[in-house]
Amino acid sequence: MSNRVQIFDTTLRDGEQVPGSQLTTEEKIVVATQLEKLGVDIIEAGFPVSSPGDFRSVVEISKAVREPIICALSRAVQGDIDAAAEALQYAQRARIHTGIGSSDIHIQHKFNTTREKIIERAIAATKYAKSKVEDVEFYCEDAGRADLVFLSQLVEAVIGAGATVVNIPDTTGYCLPDEYGNKIKYIFEHVSNIHKATISIHCHNDLGLATANSIAGINQGARQVEVTINGIGERAGNTSLEEVVMALKVHQELGLETGINTQHIYPTSQLVSKMMRMPVQANKAIVGRNAFAHSSGIHQDGFLKNNLNYEIMNPQDVGVDKSDIVLTARSGRHALKHRLELLGFSFEKSALDELYTRFLEVADIKKEVNDGDLVELVRTAEAV
Image 1: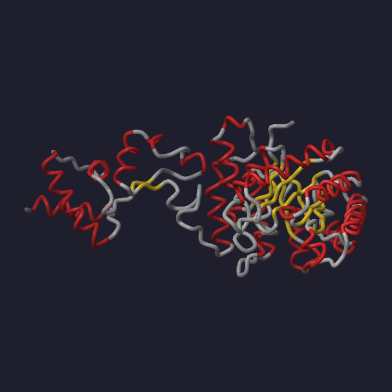
Image 2: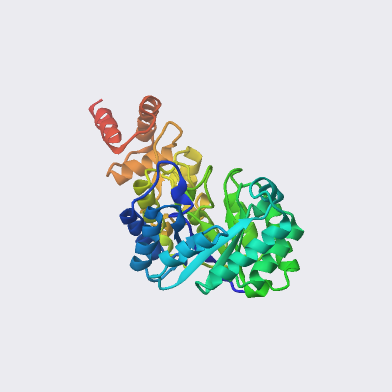
């Protein structure tokens, strides 16, 4: 089995479904170009049948981006597949992503049909998409809540019909990591033609487990992971690209790799945040403003002695300039001494102790003490 995990980015499709975050075609091209620079393998550019704007966006992204596979979403409906194929006509490498619900909840309450009819529709859609493009991905919607025996039958059927990739999405973010990992393991053990397709994972974050579930799926053999920048997407969002990529990079013992140029992660995060008008939460893993910031005195002391005490990756590896020592009332003398030395000041222990007492008084009032505040503290101390 390959040790390369393909990165399928759906920022411009699933991510762009967030209310208030829609992009123009021109803005989507800017993001797609940055995703190409980042090194993603597949860009899901849109859902062409959904609107003229989405159709145009897939067309123009196909023209502007040459390295990644360009993917278009469709339902298991001929008209959707026709629209996807037409929109992808300029793509260097095109993929149609079609599919249908696989859980009994969806089969009964969304499609009002039977398992047997779902398999028939899935086979027909896959074959029809295959007549349009060589690369066909099939999604088994709500696979996270699907019966394992039926899910395996569905996967085997669409691979037999020509699917090159089969997506096993936890559409509602329902699964626990062991549960989702075991689901992928079961599919590998019970689908006879599994070697003919790549298994993909697409996890939502309703329980905050999207990244954990994705890693569990990868560990069981999935070799494509569907992600978004900053984890944006429907409801609580999707699996975060930066979290999965850096988890694999930090845990070298897994023996897995991606084609992502990680130094472009932070700039890409900032671009998407700005263009989609979605601020990144301060404590967001990898790309939040506090991801490499230290304010606790105990942590600051350990970090200043050796950054490995409290950091498992270098900020430069993800495109962040440096770690930050944030001075607050929780900071200790070591952090204050360090910042003062950066500003060109040096004090004996007794003088530093006295200055530290005054520093805490200011910190209690201001919450965060900046360099200007420190300079003023030094001037006041020297005037006494």
